[in-house]
Image 1 (cartoon, helix red, strand yellow):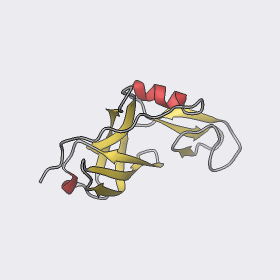
Image 2 (cartoon, rainbow, N blue to C red):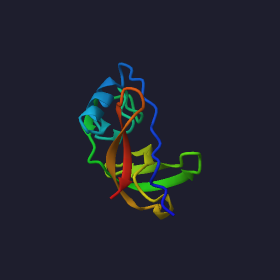
Image 3 (cartoon, rainbow, N blue to C red):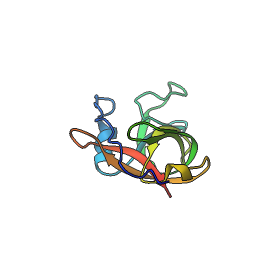
Length: 132
């Protein structure tokens, strides 16, 4: 049984000064991650201070958009959806949704690729993933 339709519409995010650049990049189809300019360590979500140490400036870099499902759960709600941790090719893991697929076919270790889903309200694109 395929659960491709209907699709759940994500809520619209509320950017603040520290996330504005992230959401502006999303409008251009880019997923940003943070990278410590001194150590090279990457993190998600991007934020002004490195979560690993407080030395070095954080720069925002575009992720490749490739990843692997680390774990997931299918929520069998009125409109079903799959929530997952995706391990990005660059290393960090992000909580996201897996969309445009048969939820019964999802597997841990499955390759996925970035897609953007318009949010409710203003349509701000939200990064999600679909099977590669």
